[in-house]
Length: 363
Image 1 (tube, rainbow, N blue to C red):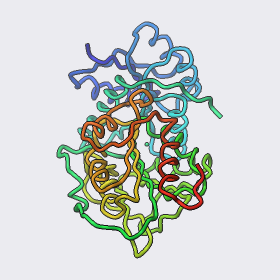
Image 2: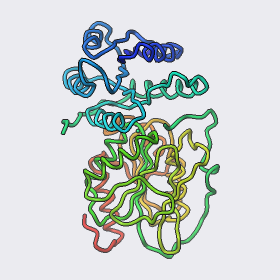
Image 3: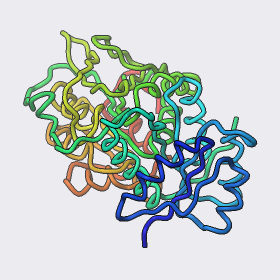
């Protein structure tokens, strides 16, 4: 049976455009549209859709209020449709906290040249949402695109085999669908004296700065969007900017962050494979990597390279993933040392660092 989609958006033009895109897909159909949450509420009862697309800012009822009620009374997969503005980015991140599975940027009316790429992204998000494991939302208190050719990390940097005199540790994190909440859960548990952390999360460029600021306000460590050439410091986490690869490099005795505009890898920019390849090249056994919830296989090849270079590698388990795609592929390739539920990942990382004798590190 096709995936039944209900579109909720106050713009008739956007409703029409999304309907055309979705109805062209062989495995999904639009069963209805609604201009606001009040109309949507009745259509959900009668049409019983599998997935909702929900506009961020809508009349009559705030989108967050509607989502909060929906996830409490009738939980179902929701893909947020957001404008590329700072305000919309913040609201979208709150929606993910409330239980939305994923988000996609709102289509531009004049993007005919890029419509095929946008249609592919929207369809993939809906397919992922239809298969997603709904998590318990928290109480209210991520443009990456796709490309036809699936490149490996070779298009950005070559694999290198080195020995390392340094013992400075480094933590690498990779995530996609469901990753905003998974990363938050991991980072809030990290102590201020932890090693530097580099993060690749599939997310559009307008969202990454807002996401980093949000994490920074919640964590004991400092969290920021990565800048090209900056030194990676302990007690700091660096998030890959949207649409740019993040790499780990060495400059003398120090780790530094490097940004690249190279081709998409594993259909993504930023790519987890690129980040993990760079860590395999310049950190080896001093690195520990975690691959989290997400669709597809980005990061699986890079994690295997890290494992072969002597790094310690972990994957989030199926039960705690929103989408068990990226961790499953990494496990299947044989590059994962440990599998653990999300609440355990930070503790496992801390235990490994403690066993490595990191001075001053508190478990």
